[in-house]
Every structure is written in structure tokens, then in C-alpha cells.
Length: 324
Image (cartoon, rainbow, N blue to C red; front, side):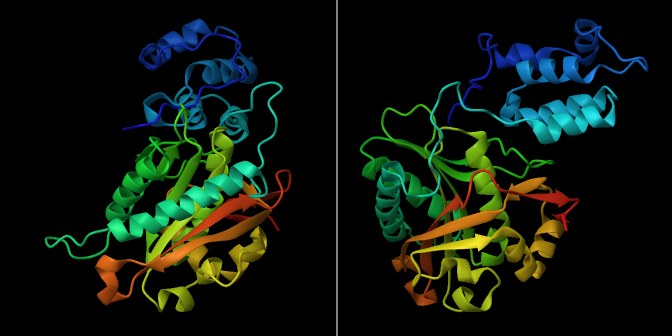
């Protein structure tokens, strides 16, 4: 199954069918918007307004990606492309209370308790495939989906969800796991899943916080990682998963400087790029335990909650690295 994309609450117009928006050819776009600058390119205000109104996540991509691609294809001014790609975000509805993503609210505590049970049960559900005996992300995701549906009392969960990621351009790949409780139309939980590659989760920390900004229904985000014993001590970023500390606060610039090799490797292997990230990150240990089907390999599954240390403090980037 796949979750419906959360609608943009700032739109004053009724939602338009995605197929109709996607079918408009570029020539028609230009005809619809005759307002131009002196050099013939569509004006920033007209183009940004039209892009936001018509391309909110068509075909599973975020509105910012669609708008940027359109701007480039129409040869709009470079400042227009940057404005669309970097400045767009899915805002909260007017009058909606700010979400507490710091882990101190009752909602967060309830979700952490539920997620603790879900991850623990999923570890026991994972079965070894004789045809492919190694532990794989798909096995963990399958266990999480089954455990969530049961533990949440009839909720829904899915893997590989295309959730918008504000503050990133180009956009990173899909989110590994998303889930909703009974009665929720949109996911309240999202998670990234990794096996052994703890260093790669440096990317996921910042990505998840942006995912939570892009889908306002999300109340909690998690890292779920499996590793054999030496991975928890000998790999960069392994300190994020220290089970002896309940909650820790990290400075984002220090994280990237401290685990520079991990960041360099991620830049080589990933296409997404952050334009800014939260200046501080809070991590909370949720659960850790063995994976019985892979006891011979001594695999452990650990879950960490990830939240911004402060909602209004940012670390901007120049290219691929934090601004000095």
C-alpha cells in the first residue's frame, strides 16, 4: 500500500487532479502565464505561484523538485530556480499549533512506546531466507509492517514512500518506512532502515528531520539499524546508537566535522544535497536487542528517535559542506 500525499494546507483553491496538472505541456504553461520580464523569461512571482499551485508531488516527487525542473526547462532566470528549489516548504494550516518534535510531548512518548514494541516484535519476526541467507533491509521492513499493523490495533504501514524533503535539492531517495495509527489518513511516523552501514545514517539523520517538515502529519522519526558487534564500536557514527545514554544532543556542524569521512563517502554515493539542516539534533535510544534468526551472526537491531534540538536554528550549506 501507499500513503496519500498530505495536501498543502496553504492553498486557497480546491485541490486539482494530479493527472490534469501533469498533462499540461510546457508550451501551454507559457501561454497560461504571459506575464514576463523584459528578457522574455517568466517572472519569478508568476512562475513560483503557478508551480506551487499545480505541481505538489505529482508522480511521487516533491513540489520543489517539479518546480525546479520546470524552471530549468523553461530557461527561467537562475534566481527563480533557486527560489523555487530552496524556498518551498509545506506549511502548517493557518492557526495550527506547532508540532513538538523534541520528544517531550505526550504524543512523542506514546509513539516511542509503540515503536519500542514494534521494533522488538519485528526482530523476532525476521526469518532467514534459504535462497538469500544474508540479512536484508526488506526483511526488516516486512517485520516492521506486520508488527505495526498488529501493535497499533489496525493501523497501516508501508515501505519505500516518496515523502517530500524540503531544504534538499536534488531530492534524496524515498523514505524506507512510514506508518499511521487507526483513524489517521497520513503517516505519523517515518523511519530509515540500514544494515551494517552505520556511517551512512549521518545522512539519514538530517534527511528525516527535513521529511518531518515536508509532511506535517509526522510526529516522530526514527533510525532503525541492524549490525553485528564490531559495527557498534568501530564504525563512524556508531556513537549515535549508544544504548547506555537515553537522550543526547548533537551539534550538526560538529557531527559533520567529526565524521568527515562518512560525509565524503555519502557525497560520492548519493545524489541528494541539503541546502540547510537543523543546527542541533537530539537522539533518544528506543530499543535494542538481538535478531534471533541471525543469532549465529550476532546481529542486533537498534532503534533511535531523531528530533531537532531547536526548531528555529539552522546550519546553512555552501555547496556540499556547511557554511563556515
